[in-house]
Image 1: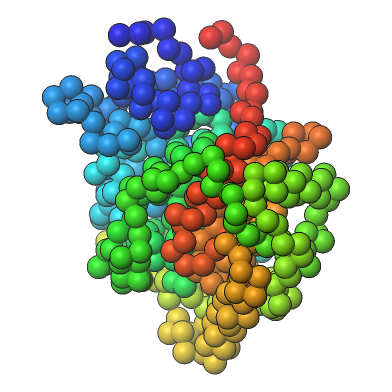
Image 2: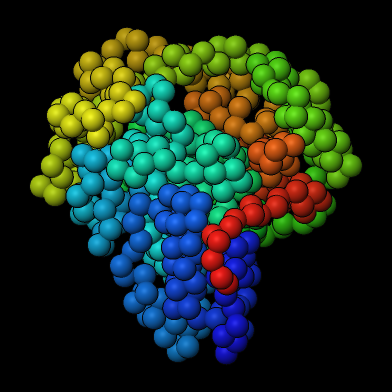
Length: 496
């Protein structure tokens, strides 16, 4: 066995790389865990102090031992066997780790069961290395909390510019951990931009799946109509591997029934470098590209040139007729304000006696009683949600939900794709996250380059429900034809 691998070999290693090392006997899963823990010690808890991990799984080492033994006796279960993954800390695990959503009110809570996501990852042989910091309550606590901040974990920093470049939110810790090579991949969650934003900001591939592709069972919720989990990885191929492990119909989340017959277990099939040949892509300028800085505009212009060179037809502009109707922040949040109370109260009830808070009102009261630690940025969205009935019967909610669906689907993405015969719609970074979230439609973001001072930006592809396989093919061809991603340069001021 080659014992010369160091933690530096993991800095930009993909799932494919690591699995090849494991299969060839270059490394064991036990050694992988130790090497990743070394990187966490050097870069997350010291050095630049990225602060992406809230907890490390105390069972990770023993789990790795068991998976190494299984590999030696029966071979690997699949491409994720023995691969360390970090989960956003709103994804429940039934083990020695807490599930807190970044809240001090939840810091001592142990979930009564694994989430669907944790179940599926364990079944695939992945090693849950730890829980990642996040914007507290998935950024539905207050209206001006910095991305990547939680009262339990403090501020997460972007490895491309610690303290100067935004992490994106709310799956900030997940994005930072993967970008910095502290885990092979991560699972984040999104309500509106929370996978796409940190993936773009940390030069990663992030997939925000269709609502219903992955069960939300055991995930601390924000919105019953928009929440979903999804992978955050260094490459499109890795993201496709991870996504396939998480799909399936779960009776505990009835919305997954919509994916029956439509989901895949292997999204890597059919990936080719010429996957953009003959496709039609729309570029909505109004309300999206008009908001870009000069360097972002330059990168989008280059992306259009790259896509054209790779065989795609970019229809420019293809403005979405209803985009102005979905761009108002308060309007975007109307549905979330109403759904948060009902969804969170149901989740807290599921926790049972293990949770010191059992309702949204309890969380608000706890924060009020510990204002110095918990309310650095307030809790405006929580207070607004508490004022609702929690029954989703208010006319304002019903009208807002119907309006969101109309403007996001029939008069939005569906309409522009039909009128221009598009395979997908393009957006810079996560600027199209809102309309896709309201529709429940999938998106994938891929590294598209950097600003002069090193800030990453992604190119996002969006299509209609359960068209993940098509989006992955398009993104893979773009990634392979450009290869823009560069790993961040980290310095721990220590010897190798």
